[in-house]
Image 1: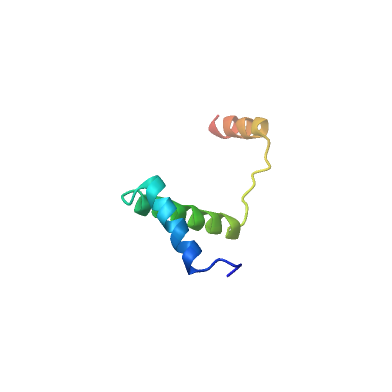
Image 2: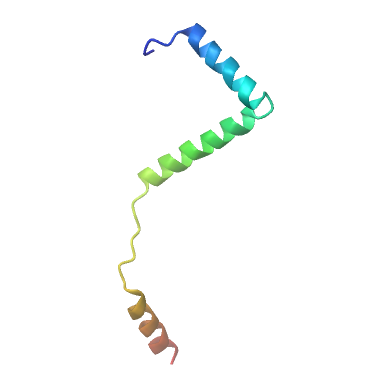
Length: 66
């Protein structure tokens, strides 16, 4: 796996636990998971673009209500 072995991964985990603390790790993991899900959802949904100019929308709204 790109030259990273089990010892390196354990060392990284220990450093992360020392920096953030063991109580913060679930929160960080949950936030990271939500970010990944939102990114996947945003990249798979088609873009919805409204190309109607704002001025024409206002004119249309006033003509329908009168």
